[in-house]
Image 1 (cartoon, helix red, strand yellow):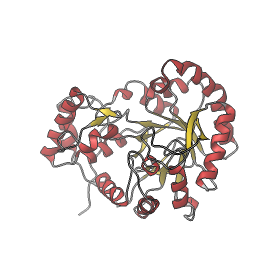
Image 2 (spheres, one colour):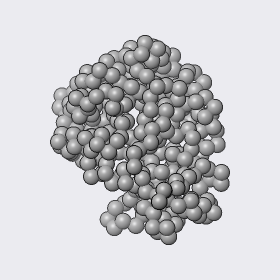
Image 3 (tube, rainbow, N blue to C red):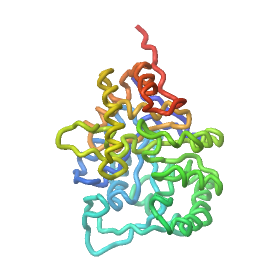
Image 4 (cartoon, one colour):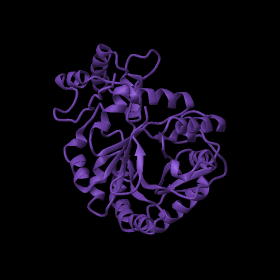
Length: 345
């Protein structure tokens, strides 16, 4: 079964419904070898994935280097690569483990959402990737959840300077699509007042566990033909591990999950067990039912993980499963749910 492709906004880009989140290739939380990183991307290409998302922040350049090394000799028509701007990597005395990355790269990331900062970041990424193109460019981690009281100042710089740079890169054909790569949908709504965005890479804010984005944000994306690439479909882990795996502390939103989150996920797990559906498979497939969502991109850390994730994406889930979740009050009442395909006999 081939992975379906969906169009990004009004661009000519068509991405597979399952993409490759490459934060893991920056040695997120644990080290991996160059060979294992190469094997993971090769397996993704073999199984039909065409979307690879990276960022300068992921391992301070390590993820971009590994993605570029794996894709450099692949036909450029066979993949779509996205990376991010908003941080400049500054050389430091020595490499050290920080911000969750166990990277050997001796750089310190510094926020810079200015016009010049975005242009420099784009040029640096092209060089680290060693590729002739970047298809999608996201402004990374802008928003109040990241910057707190400094958000208003940085947002002004980002919209007046950074957006102008990204829009120029798009108009010159140097990138095909622009957007934000963030963990909060509110800043996407705010940014839509200042510019035209093709897509947003939204991490964790429209999932099997939370659907508040349905209230205003996703309807606006449909109205303006702005696509959502859904990162973090497991809400930082709990929708992959569940709550019952021995020796594994469930994480939600990058922190140990609260008692209320654990309770809700446990109820979802009960229904998954009733239908013999893996929790991770339900979490992967659920967001794609919304017409604004074109792709989900979990972090993929090995060839084996790529293979198992593709299997979960293609698992047939009966309509009764989703109805049961809705009847139990575990999903928004009017939330779109995946349609069950009829398999020809």
